Image (cartoon, rainbow, N blue to C red):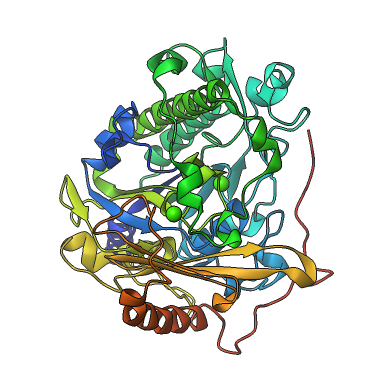
Length: 484
Ligand SMILES: [Ca+2]
Ligand SMILES: [Ca+2]
């Protein structure tokens, strides 16, 4: 009997913990990814501890569809979540989510902040559109950014903050802001986890920054970026001449109001919000180190999709260009990853669920659609699937159609409405900014034909076995939309 108990606690102790850190609307404006301006010392240090994925992509460049995808391990065509303000329990209620799979294996699973969809900033302080079945503990702090400072926020559309470009350099310091409170809560939960050594944990911390409104402490973060020296994208008019209208479909009319001065302020506030969020990541990882949990904890850091800061004339998300589809992805797996290594092959966030499950040795649903990245974590020269697929919608109701974009090591190839609304081809060997659309050039016809075949096979595989996207059903649990 004693032997049996000893064996059980040994196996529990050997199971790794998971610290899952997700930023909101963060692109690759990070020092670790070579950005020349970003001051992100904490995320850079985290990158130096494990594997940095140079080419990681979201499945859908919008909060709700992307998060429901990587937390279910299913593409949006199989999760059924193709819009915000929905949750997979309305489409595939019995599917076991990533944190839920850890719970079923005996883990403590906790959520602090935004993991599934949340309306930002209105849902801050509530459960938003999150999934109660995924967690044992849920914490929803709300700081001055949500509760006090809205009247001071500059916005392109008066009265709106979450969907529109808006920003504010707050006089309040880190600990008064929602993300600062999230970090403090994470520290508190980690202290509790450290005391309970016989039970592994899956702790997810979802930061709200740099999502709009870009509200962050003025000191020191806005001071790190000189407004006058913020970059402006040039040559947009010429760049747009070879683009189908759908490629620019995420442009919002209100953005016509952006003067050069407002553009610079916007970029400054976005960078400041990233640096503020970076400091909170540092606080959480420091707590992990201080509590002696680093050697037994896998750390993942990512964002839910990329973000535009004026490239191709676009701002925010919902495009299929590199800036909107690419996400930072860092994984530290003690005993598996080597410090400071970089994986170059394209990977997808659909791969996170099978990767964490394999690392922890837990059972997963049979229908997951990603690959495990464990072979790449062990040896970053392994290429695995070696492509990533991103989908986005255009129009609504009966007029809705989709664009799909395939990223291979060399090419980005995009089809809008199966090519009927345009195609794009970019050669990343020569054109990292995706300026020259080669899709209609005769000399690239064979490449387009090959990539089109590959893209269509990849799209086909995003659907469930029956080939039909599950629809939202009435009578299932609906998200809590409380506005505090
Ligand atoms: Ca987002
Ligand atoms: Ca162009």
